[in-house]
Length: 154
Image 1 (tube, rainbow, N blue to C red):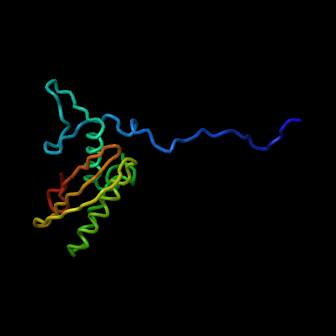
Image 2: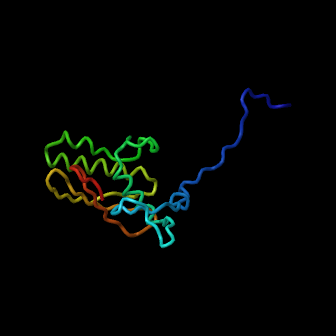
Image 3: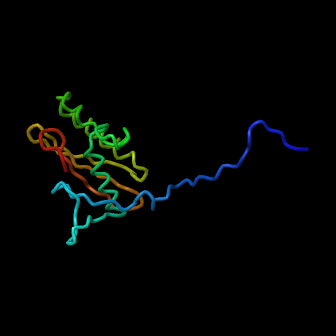
């Protein structure tokens, strides 16, 4: 006797628990934040970064980008430093910076943690440094960025 079902039934493929990290760390163009341009070799070709270096480049870009400022990025990418102008209390300001940086970096599936925030203030800006660790590396990386003021950046 034929199986008469109103809706078709089929087996779903098994989804692995761990993402393919080779796909997460695709080669990307190396951006030199000091010059504000892509790094080029002697033949004027753009230098690429891979693996851990590509991940660290992504971290710096994610922290340096204001959320919803670029149509090319989803609203999950970036930080919300424009809100800092409304916060005058130093402790609250530092807490807000820590929160928005942590949220921005935890979007990446390979980010294990963000911690050890340190702050220093100069005029109307704040320098913040923090530790970020990505999978599968054992080493942590300390990144620094200036937020607020006229010269935001790495």
